[in-house]
Image (cartoon, rainbow, N blue to C red):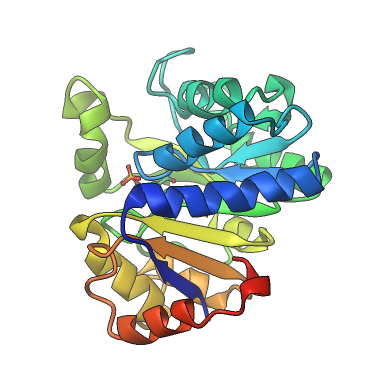
Length: 260
Ligand code: F6R
């Protein structure tokens, strides 16, 4: 089962995750991070930037992003390539050559998924994968109905996800219709999954993912199939969890040596 940690604020949750990643990178400077975009992981990247300023060296570490929009012009500020470059690569002083994002350009899109899978496998996989969750329950851009065995491929975004992400664009019409996303099978290969969710808007999706039936209709429930999952929430995102008192009890009585 997943370990569910409820922190008082998203900043406290982000600090916990950043401390863990910083110690991973200190122990293994060539660690591989799985990075997500969207609003949720931003406080983690900010906290990691502070760990860098305090002396943690990310220059040998690698990263693989979860997904990318299809068809945005090269260098578009909301392409996930550009977001990861701003929020992760530059902020942490990573080597751009070691930071990978699926190729969302129209030319060659048919093979973009397979190329990304090959790059991930040749690299040796992801040590720790950060995940947000969509209001539809998506992980990456695996919308409801995605196979738990799915690999990186082109998907069609739901109208709900396009509306959710319209805040990053001038209008809804500008939000791409398609994306290239790691599959749920790809995500499940990462050695440790860290699912972050903050705010009441995520409470229903979190409860369904953590405690609901394992179902392709709720892609987030795929985390229940992984042996090492940490779910980091604020109280609002945890508010619909049936067993939240137990999670708090386990958290309060956790052996010091365990870490996350
Ligand atoms: C982003 C991603 C998505 C987001 C999800 C939540 O790379 O794969 O699954 O994590 O849409 O987005 P935010 O964090 O903006 O609520």
